Image (cartoon, rainbow, N blue to C red):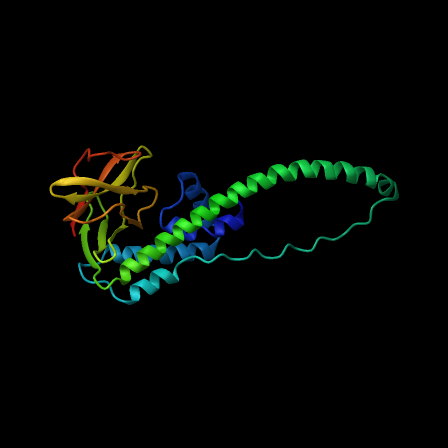
Length: 247
């Protein structure tokens, strides 16, 4: 992954939309890129404020804060000038043959590189589009006139806030300070509906702060729960919820 690719992943990293390997690469990049670190910090600060919020309608300015933190794609700086050294006369006689061989090798290499670059570019576009869509959905949810919030402490540490809008049919969980899990475990989201827990997606365990849109409809649900499950999730909870919030 190139530096240019890494610069575009601040939103995906803050929204936990990266794979474990990509998240580790980006974490190393943050240590040497102050601008990316600042963007991620702003997004995490917004999530942390929501997770510590009380159950009130979110302020109108909150959407602007979230949308302002959406990462932009920055251009790379121009390449530094490289001095040209005149070729020795003996090398000038060999240049046509060397150039032909170099062109042939370059053509073969370029074909392989182009295919790999296209695949990486496609994956990057997909990740960026996913992050932008999720950020836009979170912003619309926070700005919804009927949006409600319910906050609570997470067993074992941390806090969580559920933001829901019945008009939009969307629900999101903002979390802060979640305990880190082992690689074999994951946080799973659930709707509590008529005494039954319905799966609603997974939360990556790589970072303690973030936000996640719940999958499926909240219609008929009375609450949202979070449990710790085996990697990949479960059809039904294997343990008691670490937090259960009303809707």
